Image 1 (cartoon, rainbow, N blue to C red):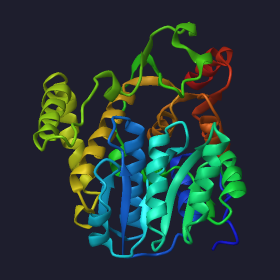
Image 2 (image 1 turned 60 degrees about the vertical axis):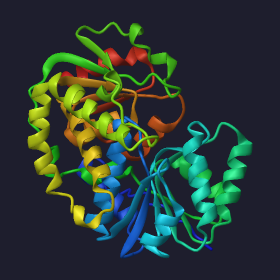
Image 3 (image 1 turned 90 degrees about the vertical axis):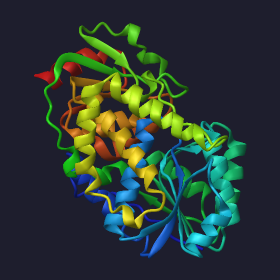
Image 4 (image 1 turned 180 degrees about the vertical axis):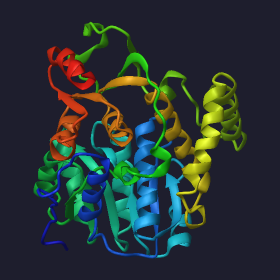
Length: 372
């Protein structure tokens, strides 16, 4: 039972770039403990590039910093309790971070609760999450599951989520920490040359987290390109488990046609880039290496998409984080709840090439500042 909580305010560290936030990440997580091996669950079986940034940062943190072997890695769809038991014994379980600890994306939370309820004999660590419940009864249900576990650590990535966790998850250790994607700050494969065009990208999510105050048709900006992650624009497919051949066919279609013959220059660039990137990952210490290679490939596409623009406007948290990692001038917008603003006010408020905007009328002046 945890009678105390950990909070890392890091008031003495200026949060001026990705590398300083990475130092704060390490300081925040320094008391997680040491373990020889673990399971890493909730691999993102989706085409949201931001989720793959988190996954890669988590893998690099576990293998490079904690020197831990990832003995079992799985998505929720392919998860097997029996296989995990066989591979890790009583070793800890690490649950993927992100923005889904709540009831907006309840499928992720339901899987998380099931794992916690079935594994009281193991230490479990939830990596940095944003917490948001619209329905109080769902929060109370989740709190009951969390608090019944004798050794559960919940990491959160903003002060708002921290306050919720302290109040409701009172039998858990709670740690305030930046997003795991910052583990990649300073890694050589992020040092990519930029030769931006004159256009500005509005990196615009259109799902239930969209803040309706920032619709693209309301922005009178010249040379504005509106697009979500390139993976959504091209509708990449990952395949499913109904047939052993479908994932293979999906990979051939996605990698050979969608990401190859249609855009051959990216294919060439990606091949060269992946060679450098894989030198930073010890695949001998991770289970299911094809998952991690796929995430690396997704990361490249995000980099390749962003480096073409002189400035980016984004309403995605990991659009903001990728811009910080790549040192790209950008404007960061509110989403439909506190996630974006909470993260910015906790960690990235000192980034000199970023402006957080809460009113659409502030965008034009922010563009002029950043491009001056």
